[in-house]
Length: 246
Ligand SMILES: NC(=O)c1ccc[n+]([C@@H]2O[C@H](COP(=O)([O-])OP(=O)(O)OC[C@H]3O[C@@H](n4cnc5c(N)ncnc54)[C@H](OP(=O)(O)O)[C@@H]3O)[C@@H](O)[C@H]2O)c1
Image (cartoon, rainbow, N blue to C red; front, side, top):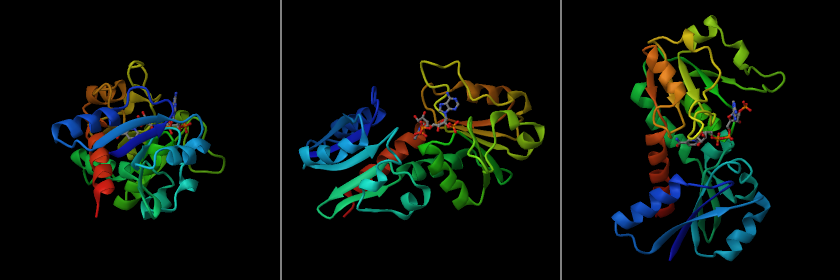
């Protein structure tokens, strides 16, 4: 049996496990299994590998996308550059880290992107924000992070800094915080929504519910919106491609 798995904490209801289990069933892939391995601490990772020599591929989620990097034998340029890894291929040569969120976000963002979207705000500074920032750099879109606790001496903004000048020049807004995820669907990043216009493009990495409060507020003001559903599917398929690459 070829084993694949997700590590993180907590794992609860995992999209990845549901997705791959359904994929194996519908595509008649009978020699693969996708497990969930919640790890209390990333230091448990080597013993997990020892216990499961048949583990060929892993997805990595909160809170280990950055913490898993020291355990890798090698990594893609993307992981090296953005400092986050959400996909690992295990071969006899060792563990090779990838970042499939980057591919997922890049392809998915394209749906509503216009030449006018030259400056972006990334809401949140966690693991997923690193993949987003990497894609924006690649596309030549300038960006600033918005954080509850900006790093000292950085160009990060606080939510209180967001005013008419910033919102009128930064027309691409990407939510990489978990705010608005079911069941807390009334939550949304604390930005001045009244300053949004039809020129804005709001991208939410959250996918459940499909229309978060963040996106609803944008839709009310004529903004273009996109949720994280297709990004999720694209990153999963990219993981599968990596695990099966010759
Ligand atoms: N659609 C997809 O394919 C996809 C892929 C990856 C992730 N995601 C989703 O993206 C979200 C973030 O993932 P992640 O791995 O980056 O998580 P994370 O590492 O926990 O980071 C989330 C960031 O959001 C900010 N934040 C957290 N709680 C907040 C709160 N109560 N109020 C305001 N800001 C808050 C924090 O930044 P500050 O402390 O700087 O404010 C934090 O670093 C999750 O909901 C995840 O499910 C979706």
